[in-house]
Length: 165
Image 1 (tube, one colour):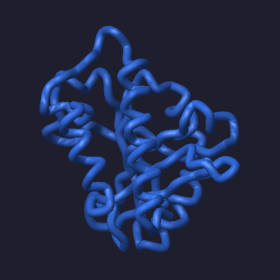
Image 2 (cartoon, rainbow, N blue to C red):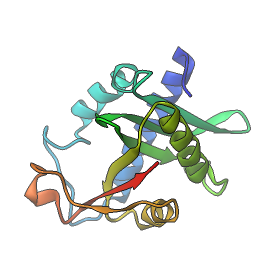
Image 3 (tube, rainbow, N blue to C red):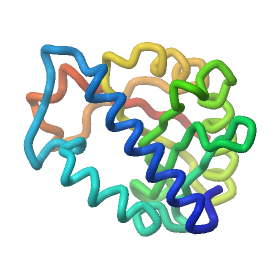
């Protein structure tokens, strides 16, 4: 769990790397732009500056995974509703891949969520990230409907999943 300014800065750096990776790898047919899009650079910068508040303990958390002492992955969560947590910004750097960090972070996050009193966890992700979806399915996630008010034009590109803890 991130617990000092150095950890928060590591999470911010990983989030910036995550954003760069996504823009390089997004399918050509969907390059959403504008201030309503969660990956709009200005909006995203505001989010990463606010990470400590958005994921503050005890309702949330930021987890950092390291390889040989270097931060290579992160995931964060916060309360989505009574008994329900939502995680986001799950990322493993290209250098950190192949070490099982994604699964390790999920397992550690589930443990912490249960200690925090959550009964269920949910998230959303881009459909083109098929390798990530396979990992989520292996950890017990199942599809759930798009939430009410989710933009119609994004529905064919984004999926939502949930699982009990």
